Image (tube, rainbow, N blue to C red):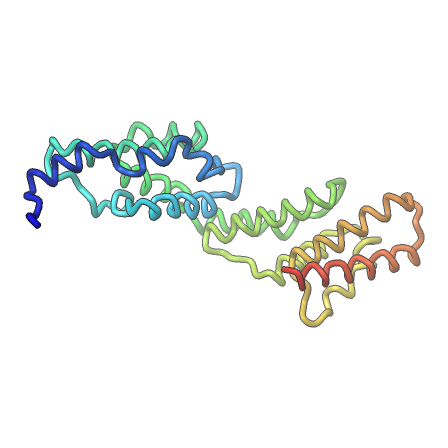
Amino acid sequence: MSEKTPATAAQSSSSTPHLAFTTISNVKLKVPILLSFSEPNYKKWSRLFLLLIRRFSLGDFLTGKSSPSSDDDSEWFQLDALIQGWILSTVNDEVCDLVLSTTNSASELWKSIYNMFHDNKPARAMQLEHQFRTTTKGSLSMTTYCQTLRNLADWLDDVDAPVSEQQLVLQVLRGLPDDLRSQTSFLQYQTPPPTFLQTRLTLLLIEQQRAELGVGGGAGDGGTVLYAGSGGAGSGGTRR
């Protein structure tokens, strides 16, 4: 069997579109996250984007290890432009406007976005830690309250100031109003400690049953609700 010469190999490569062109018609189906400064989603966005890139073995385009063989290397420039388009299609206008005019390749674009979300880490970590420690339920629904603290914990992780699962659970419990805090205090002493999802499920069950009982539900009812919720959470943990 005769081997392909570099010339014939190049002709074959140029005549057959890269799999990335023919497989992905809508990148947002593969990366269903819009990167923005207002959401703690950089880590999720970058993870999903890297999974897509690795699927087609295009990682070198992001690291800068891949470069065109010449100014006429049309396949390289097409792939690089494709990846740039993927990136820009999955970030919001604010992020796009800040990087679009200062980058000329996928690797420059990727690095610029990384730097934007990792600059001034100490200052951002201090601000986020303050928000995390001072967030209380107040008039928020239980779903919104728990999600707010979960988001802050994720954002702290993005700036290398991670919050442990137990710290997150304790902060969720600390931020509850007095009547709920007294009913949930035993969760702090459970062994093993409840996970965030178990704690959230317990609190949602309490909120639901308190609403059914009315605002004036007695402490005895609250205690019954709590233990029912705790049992449900435990079951959820087992399934998981």
